[in-house]
Image 1 (tube, rainbow, N blue to C red):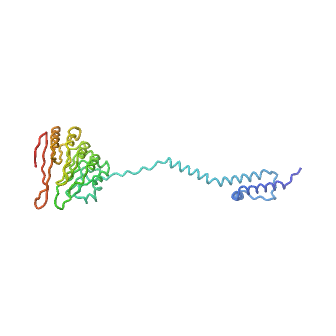
Image 2: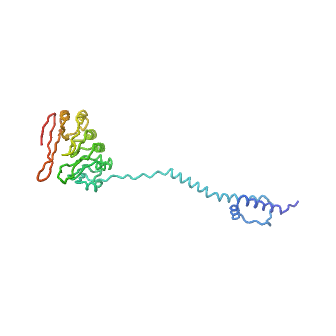
Image 3: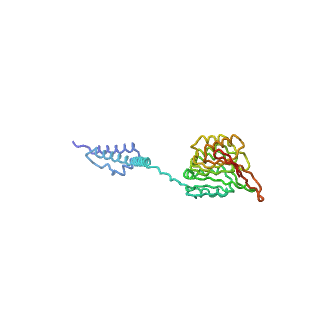
Length: 310
């Protein structure tokens, strides 16, 4: 029996109409671009063939539309994997400057403009001159250069000789806390001379003695005016009891005290350490050649004996 040729054509048209209404204009356009147009006159004995091709073309168009998102997801995952596996950049290490072996600063304005330039890893000695006013922030600036610089220092010297009417030369603003920080950061100091202070106590003395084992010369003395010495007998008794403190120390200069207990403690210390010379310093201001100058005398203690000198 002969089949009608109209039935397949109507059936195919119904399928196309259904796809248009179900999948929207985007699918229709994609289908139209990928599938040749069919007319009502098209005849075929296979009804399922054209419909199957139509469905396949629509699915291909759907995959073509979804492909960019899938590709984007794969790229994002790949970037994340690269970011996770990629090592973080190591920050460059900024090394301090080499500096000068001996860094001398005659006045505060010289320090302010050049302390970073002259102090470095090769600096062994720092000298503050006769027009310098030494304060805590100078020590903090020095320590900010780091351990490579601080551990290389062997000498820290402040010169106190000027008491003229227009002079700016003292260290009366220094505190015990600043000197403790200095001693802790610079354990290789051999020579420490800080005269011209005012009222420093036992903490400064103990810090250098306990934390600087290479120390040979130590001076912490008061200026000609201001507060008197705050050293107590404990400052010397503790040094006498701790034999491992500053085993190489040869010279110790501190301000003289009127406390008899301090004098007895100093004498006992000199008896325990026969190689150590201890000088208790007194200073005053006198007029010479029309201006003020420092006059100084000291009392020497060595091997348990006392000797007064000028």
